[in-house]
Image (cartoon, rainbow, N blue to C red; front, side, top):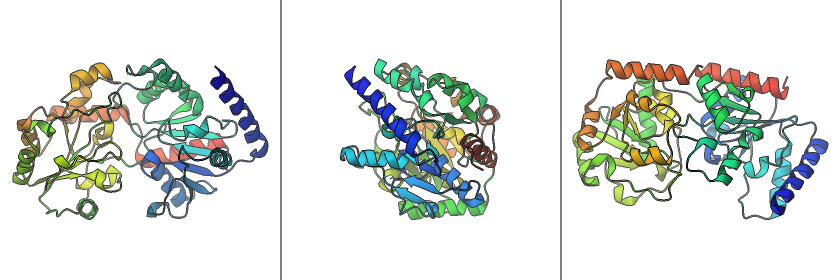
Length: 401
């Protein structure tokens, strides 16, 4: 009780300082997914910069020295939790100057944003991607304290970007947000399209070669495996990928099929060296690259319950689902939408299914219809429209002219 009262007192004190000394707020600051300029934030930043859509300075949290796409922006690294109180307070005052603070995850910068007033300021959440698992206050694995924290997210952000009316009301209910603050204006980053030019395919494959140091022939098949983050358990008890008896056996099949498997673990997790082989590459070995920069050169995408595939339902990429623990996952986390969404791709339950997946060269009629249905339900805007809608909403709410 004493801790709660103390935090409340700090909020009031910093709120007054915010309103008195930073009444004329200006500028926009971005905080990318996992603190890295990427995804929706980077797409919106580039759009504002290219079109000169908002007349203000653009800032990033974190280090942007190696990110050519953020040139022309200012940056200030977010302090680590173990630094002195003075450093944290200094950073809080730094954030007070911004009229718009944009993040991609509800917990981003929350150590500071809870002390920042929403008056004359927009705190914008550009949701990183559609989540298939039950989330927010509806997640079955949360404690009462965690549910309490999630129930406050809707009050923290006064603008949340969603991609459809369907997602609007889903997000509103899971984070206790006003539907009026959940605006259909996403996703801002590029989604997969039905056709890719040969030049785009070649460019994506060159990026794959240069980034991951692999030699790719034009007829090599590129498969990405991108599992979800299992935040409901501390242990990852995953069997050998796709039901093979050993990694060696899987690698031999990849060689035989002239295929490379890129394993894209959630975030920046460290790859297990025992699973590496000539045709199995762990992408966590190098800096993360947005998947949309690579998708034109990718032939297949396999996941379990990650929503990464949803933004590529209209693309050429064949989809597969390896859900070895679905019974446990369904009970521990549950799903936010019908499991019929997995009919957009092939089910992979054993090594034979995986081999069949490698051989696929087209979608069935039922699969194509399912992909169209889910894409139209979950995404209402084209990328360019999403970016212009987002800028217009920021300008309207933050009174940029």
